[in-house]
Structures are given as C-alpha cells and as structure tokens.
Image (cartoon, rainbow, N blue to C red; front, side, top):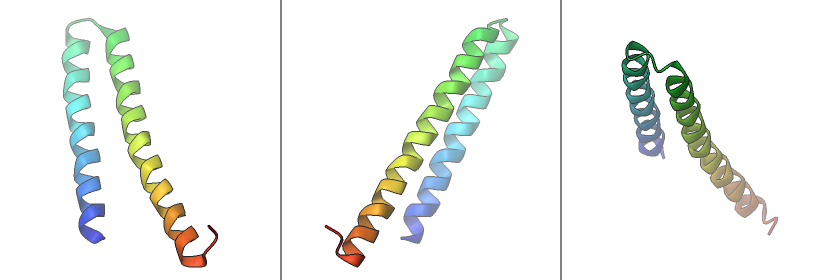
Length: 68
C-alpha cells in the first residue's frame, strides 16, 4: 500500500512540474489565457486522481464493515 502512495505522490509531483514548465513557456509567449487554462486542467487531473483514491477508500470501508 505504501508503494501506491509513493507512486501517486511522484505522479502528482510530475504533473505539477510539467504544468509549471508549460505555464512558464506560455507566459513567456504572451499566452496568459492558455496558461491559466493549462493550470486549471492540471488541477482537474490531480483532483480526478484523488477522487479515485477516495472511491477505493470507501470501497475498502464497505468491505470491512460488510455494508454491501
């Protein structure tokens, strides 16, 4: 279970670094609106990853307590 958490942290960090670099490049090219949209897309991607983990947590809780 710990390796999954570490893997997830590395994925989130990688996405953050990638989005930051692209954001800087777009701002240097005077594409402010595209840079903001790219940042928003990055946040949505990370939120979807976290939502999947929360779903797995609730499934585990249901299994442990025999709710379903």
